[in-house]
Amino acid sequence: MPTNKNAAIRYQTLDKCFRDRRHRYYLEDLIDKCEEALYYYNGVGEVSRRQIFEDIRFMESETGWSIPLDRHQDGRRVYYRYSDPDFTINAQPLTEEEANQLRAVIITLSRFRGLPCNAWIDEVISNLEWRFGLRGKNEKNIIGFEQNPFLKGLDLLPDIIHAAVNGQAVSITYRTYKSSEEEHTVVVHPWYVKQYNNRWFLMAYDAEADRITNFALDRIQGFQVEEGVTFIPNDEVDFEHYFDDVFGVTIPPADVEKIRVELQFSPKQYPYIVSKPLHHSQEIMDDENRIIAVEVRPTYEFTQLILSFGADVTVLAPASYQQEIIANLRRNLQNYDSMQIDCTHVS
Image 1: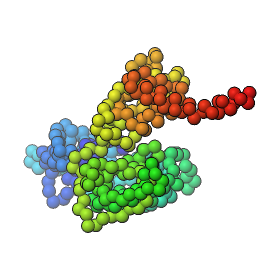
Image 2 (image 1 turned 90 degrees about the vertical axis):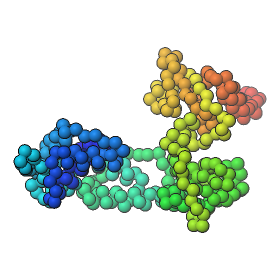
Image 3 (image 1 turned 120 degrees about the vertical axis):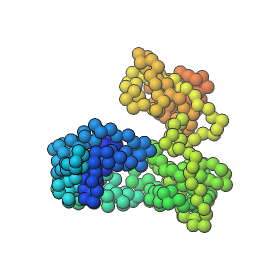
Image 4 (image 1 turned 180 degrees about the vertical axis):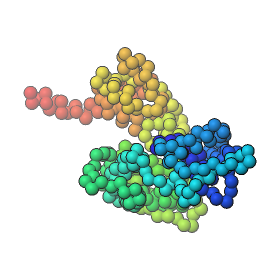
């Protein structure tokens, strides 16, 4: 049954109280226990008498768990306890709605089965299927994801995640894009793993250079844990917002400032841009003329995105970025100059 996090915490707390045969839980005790649990998980918690009564009513209903709750009179007070000491909401069968939701999750996860870095998913899916008996005999794939199981470096993903979770420094031998032959080895501290454009990237702290370095997994030639190096934890970077000002995974130098880019799209492309924004900062400036704006620190990935739209987009501002796009288009046209000459000669 769909519910929010706070409600789920209260239901679990009440269930625990109702199962306890050693203590008597009066209404005030139930309130205290729920507030204590909410404070533990959320850092704040306030529960009213009315909320507890509503929670109990829900738990007793068929929509909830039909709990067998007794109300025992103790003078002028009442304490609450399950009539069945073995009852718990956690042992109840799934509702049809819950089963459908869980089945959808299993189908979604199943799309990742068989990849070299996802062996753990097989175990999770198998446990879910066995525990809830949700696997269909003639189950067909009805959902697909953009994924490249042949991408180099995918086999490193579990080890990289393990090192990050367990706080282990690692030694990486890396081959840059600028030179297919040049390699260098560096000891770094893995902090974050991100997927972008169907590829995986490691954000790791390079203590010697005192900076966060971006490593594409398909360019990593060697990887090993450095047991003798003390791990430096991430105590300062919030990666949930680290990429807010950029498009992609590349963080430009500090002197690259954020700019407001105004873009005009063709009638054909505009509906797609509205339904799938280029960036979280996107805003519609002029719907009639199909003009939107985004605020980003320009990077190679962002420029490539703009160029990918071809004639379906025009950069209106700022002038400096407009000139950068024009320069890219001119260099692109130069690649075809000789072909145009040859074609003219033939005709």
